[in-house]
Image (cartoon, rainbow over all chains, first blue to last red):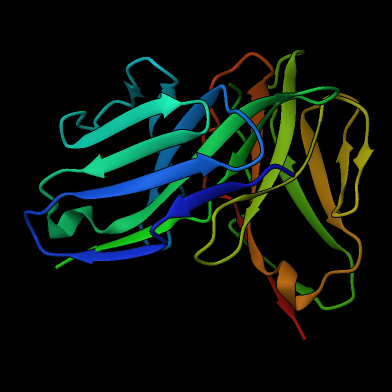
Length: 118
Length: 110
């Protein structure tokens, strides 16, 4: 299947700083990218949907000024956690959607980024 | 998109077939059944999807009942590396996003 990468895989930061997470589709152009977060022993929660060149659509309860999403190209989306606090510590996962011949729309996931805010 | 119901956990012996059920009684005619799994501390991995016919690939088989109200994911010869949380998701082809439920935590025992 298609490969999605995330960088960094782990990050530890001090409270009040901002952290940027990159998500790249390595061998395909993604029509849409998604950002999820996951707390320990919980399921993935969709945060936002982003299309290249347009503003992201955030899920209810997700602060758009807190979690800035930039989707500058068909292969790159970034999530910036601004003024991070300990409660923002979580596993952040991106995914990319692509239209494949024969199987239709498929969604591939990155390996995740573990953010720890001290 | 239709809601799915899965058992919270299952155990299976290594080498045996693991059969994971999923109920989706409100599925509509144009909605597909997708299966993903998530191994601890990794991103979800696509396994298989189907509409109404049974499907098989190198990872698993998907059996969908004739009325499409339920399905079963079959891992034919489970290994320890198949220990993961398995998610059954129903999604219309034109739908924008995958929404995850709680899934089934499958533990393969030696």
